[in-house]
Amino acid sequence: MSKPKQRQAAPDAAVLEPGLVVATYGRHCLVETPEGRRLICHPRGKKNQVVVGDQVLWQIAGDEGSIEKLQERRNLFYRQDEIRTKSFAANLDRVLILIAADPEYSESQLSRALVAAEAERITPIIALNKSDLAQPFAQAWERLAPYRAMGYSVMPISLSPRSPVADDGVTALCKHLQGLTTLVLGPSGSGKSTLINRLVPDAQVETGEISLALNSGKHTTTSTRWYWVPALDGVAQEGAATGAGRTALIDSPGFQEFGLHHIEPTRLADCMPDLRKHLGGCKFYNCTHLHEPGCAVLAQVETAEHPGTISARRHRIYAQLFEELGQQRW
Image (tube, rainbow, N blue to C red; front, side, top):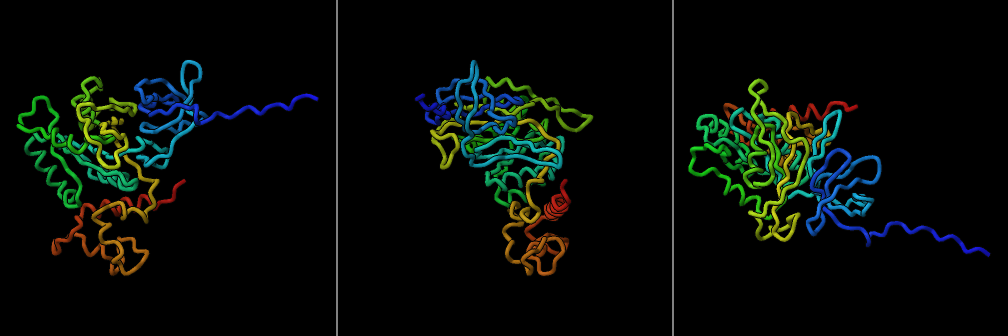
């Protein structure tokens, strides 16, 4: 009587190695082991579902590695339009939204990035670059008054090497980043690569040149990448993703558009703090906060006769986004 064939054992999670995804390049990704060794890995399956910041379990497959399991994420920061979804990074503590006083930043794009962060319960920080340009900066700073009133951290900085200001604001900004994992986000030309180079001298990230014709910068960073910042390591803040007080920055590609098609229009107001504080006070339970009588949100929108606590610009952005997100998606 022949022996029954033994069933081949499935890969045991105990023999798999833990790792951190620190870069992605199409179908490939770079994984860092707890000891600091880095190697190219390929996700199992046809679709690449890992992003920078993911914790994974992998095993050796020839000269490279094979990702066998994706660990549960705390969050995933991404944008989505009617055509595609772009994932930036996972397991974040902060999103640093870097904008510049000149060329003038788009308040709509800023608001979209903030909504995406709020939807994932990630704390955003706004940094306004080019504080050395007195008049443009003063105007841009004034436009950010509603965001300061909402309780967002809004930091003035100057990343120009020829900055005449005595305090460039970078030291103060770093206190908000210490011991945390932060995605650096912003339109091309806002200074992301310059900031990364400042804090991570060996990063060798290309600095984008401003394109006067397009009023925006060239896309110098084409992939998302993780950088450790030893100079900022210290005591870990509560709930930090990296643990042990390690500081990490994630550089991301510049963007011109920021779609929010993954957010239902009925959820939008809850992702905007200035509107959110008035939710629940409306006459109708399904109020859209656009035209209904007895709307607690509309009652707080500023007008020439009524100061209000919600700026008219912010409510216009809400109305535009609500209409955009309410359109049929194919």
